[in-house]
Length: 254
Image 1 (cartoon, rainbow, N blue to C red):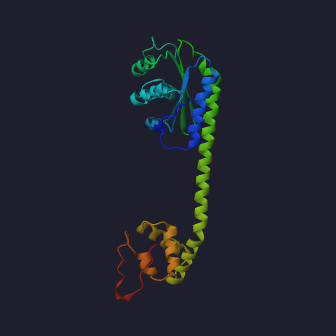
Image 2 (tube, rainbow, N blue to C red):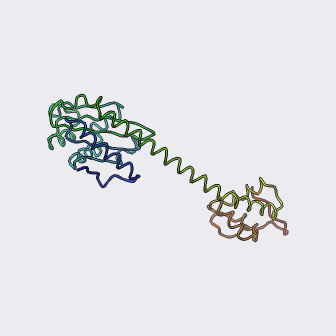
C-alpha cells in the first residue's frame, strides 16, 4: 500500500496525489523495481522541507536518511541534473549512511531521476533487491512517467499563480471605486488636484500602516469629516499632527 508520510509539509492535496500515483506506477511498470519513492521541493534551499511519497515505510525512511545527512542519490542527482544509478550498494561506498540504511532493508540497487520544472525539483527514487537490476531504468518507462508528472506539477503551479493574480485584480477592481470616491472628497475638501489627492491618500496609508482601500473607505464613510486630521495623522495613529501657527490651513502632505 502506498505510504505518504505525515511530514509532507504545506501544499495542495493534488500534488500529494500526483506523487503517490507516480511512485505506484513505477512499481507497476518496472518489474525489477521492488519499491519507489518520490520527493518534491522548491529548489536547493528547501531540500529539508521536501514532500515525500513512498510505496513502503522503509523507503520513506531511506529518503529521510538522505535529507538528514544531505548526502545520497537525491543530492547527487539534483546537483548533477542527471540520473544517478548505484548498481550494487554492497560495493558502492559513495554514501555511507544511506548505503548502510539501504542494505539494512535488503536494497542492493537504486536509480534516482531528477526533474526540474517551474522552480520545483522532483526526484524519483527506484529501488531493487537484485544487483544491476536498475541499470537501464533512467531511460525506460520511469523517465517518461517522471517527466509527465513534473510537467503536470508545473502546470498546477502556473494555474495557482494565475488564480492568485486574478484574485488580486478582482480585489483591486472592487476597491478602485472607493479610492476614486475618496480622492474626489479630498480634492473638494482640501481644494487640490487629483494627483495631490491620490498622493495624500497613499501617504496616509503608509503612515498609518493601513491598506489604501481601508483609508479610502474611512474617508468615504465619514464623508470628509475630520479629513485634515486623517491625512495629517502620524504613524501609529497617535492623534493629529499639530497645525501651523496663526490658524493658517495645514499644508497638503504629498
